[in-house]
Amino acid sequence: MGTIKDIVDLSTQLANSVQDRKVSAELYKIQSLTLQLQAEQSDLHDKNVQLREALLDLRDENRQLKNELTNRDEWKNKLASYDLVTTEGGATVYKSKGEPTHYICPSCVSKREAQILQDCRDDLGNYQCPNHDCQTKYPVKLIEDPPLPTVNRGVRDYDPLNYR
Ligand SMILES: [Zn+2]
Image (tube, rainbow, N blue to C red; front, side, top):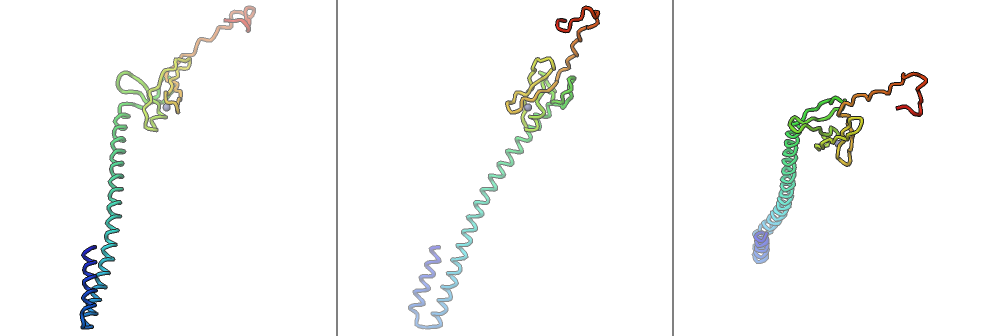
């Protein structure tokens, strides 16, 4: 920028001091071209700044995408250590291939979380997802129907308010 200003100043000085009008006109033409050059250089400078910013944005985006890719691979590997199974209780959950055998919540798997289902120890064979926002219960274990109380002990003995 400084050089261009020097050229403009010099050509102005020369144009003012030269007597020959033709030479003077040529000098003004040089001055005009130099100013045009200055404007173009300024544009190029602005474009350069914009390109540099775009490059930084692209680098950020690239880094982010690489991280996402790594996370996706890690998750894929983790999920590969499970099989989607239907348990004897009828629940469809992910079961670990290795020991200790455990199940993870299929609902949370869709959110890329491995939540190990916990045995509720209830009468229904339920396991529950420990994730606070989920807490879905799955009938993992098969509970045999509890034996029905035998009623045919004789009609006389039957007391609906007091039978065991
Ligand atoms: Zn869950």
